[in-house]
Image (tube, rainbow, N blue to C red; front, side):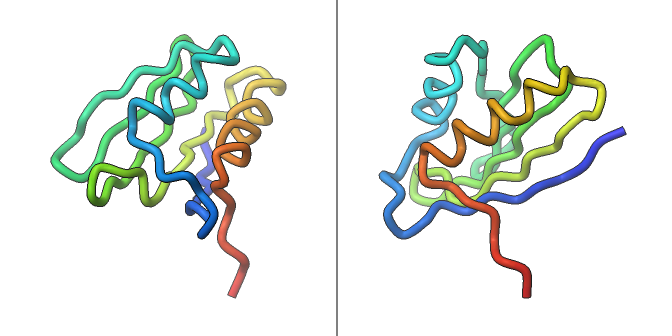
Length: 96
């Protein structure tokens, strides 16, 4: 089972490439790797976890992230992923 959550960079976001975003996960001990999907999309995989991030890229920078959160991962894992995204100035869109 999984759930999706969406993240957008804020206006103040530093503008990160896929490699830079993956490196932010690596600095907290999560072995994130980038697996390109096509020219404008890539998966960020964090083994051995089932949770994945699907990133949309525009002009070489991450413009949108879909967090495909697996409910099979340890409870402490998802808050770590969310913290990395928030520290990179990504946030969830406000409800309409």
